[in-house]
Length: 67
Image (cartoon, rainbow, N blue to C red; front, side, top):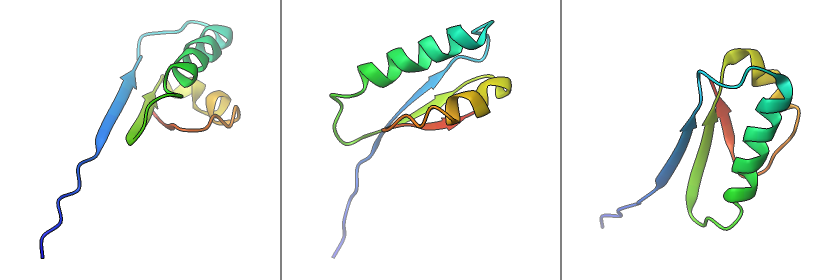
């Protein structure tokens, strides 16, 4: 028996932005709000490495983070 699993992955990559912590929180908050209605989609948000700890500490649901 063969099973085919289809997974959609949505990756947000904003390496050149933002310039401040507040902008970083704003961007990821907008993404989090926008993905609430998505079903069966894995979401990854990739940001500049300097913001990884900040965004990870927000404990946002429904997305993974990367750099």
